[in-house]
Structure formats: structure tokens, C-alpha cells
Length: 198
Image (cartoon, rainbow, N blue to C red):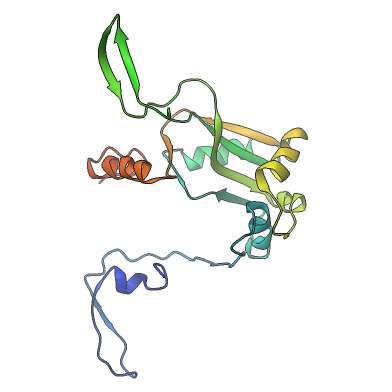
């Protein structure tokens, strides 16, 4: 609905209740030339099945894939360059997860600093920004029960076909209201490192 009605929801407009008249738009300065294909992959379909069901719409040998609930300042051009530098089916962005709880910095019994959700310095997790060759589709089925992480990703990693691009910068998932509020605060204070501020 958001994209289908994008011109209306992002503009002032005049509408005459006459089926022969098109709406007239004003103050629509944020014109996009995006091309978006929407695919109904089934409400209960697991991620692997969803990815397989979009195969016919992927026109290139190399393509990007993301979950859509992670925000990061990962350099996409460097990710592509890294992927092209090795001969593997896929590349996953490896990130440091934020701590689930705030972190206290102590000097003896004195709390000298407090961080809301610091980035962990050790250990990596799947950051959800991928690049794949078309070959990944041969590891998937269009079944509702085709899992992505415990199916295709596990298999290509065991075959040594999944390269990891280490990203030590900002990464945050948005799985709940608290995380949404945290990310909104970063945007409102212009501290969102994933946005190019003008």
C-alpha cells in the first residue's frame, strides 16, 4: 500500500471526483525512479521457499539479499568488491551484535560511564546483508518448509562456498519497539551513521 500509493502519500494533491480527471500533484520533490517487483510468496512460507519463489524475477547472475529488519552502515560497494574477489556462491556480512543490556564502565565501585546498547567487540553473527550467485537457487525448493539458514546456508558453508565479509561498524536489528525507538532517536538526533546527511 505504501509504494502503490507513494505519490499520494508523499505529496499534496488535488482530486476532482470525476473518473475522467487525473489527480494533480504538488510539492512532490522526492521523486523516485525505483523499480519494485512485489511477489506473494505465501504467509507461512519459510525464507528458503520465499527466495526460491522469486528466482524467475532475478535477471542477473549476482544479486543482493537482505532480511529487511537490520540497519547498518555497511559499505555495499566494498561488499560487492569483496564478493567478486573470491570464487564462492555467497557472501554474508558478519557483524558484532549490540549487547542485549546496557554496559557499565566501572572504576572500582564507581560507575564512570553507561552505554545503552554498545556494540560487542568479540564474536560475529549473520548481519543479514548477502550477495549470491544464481547457483544458490539450486540449494532451495519452493516448498513452504524450505528453511534458508538451516538449509542452504548451512549446506554451502559446509561446502566452503560461503565467504564472510567482516563489518565492524554500526549494525542494529529492529525486532521490537525498544529497538525501533532507539533507531528513531539516532535519526532524530542526526546520529544515524547509515544515512548520508546533507
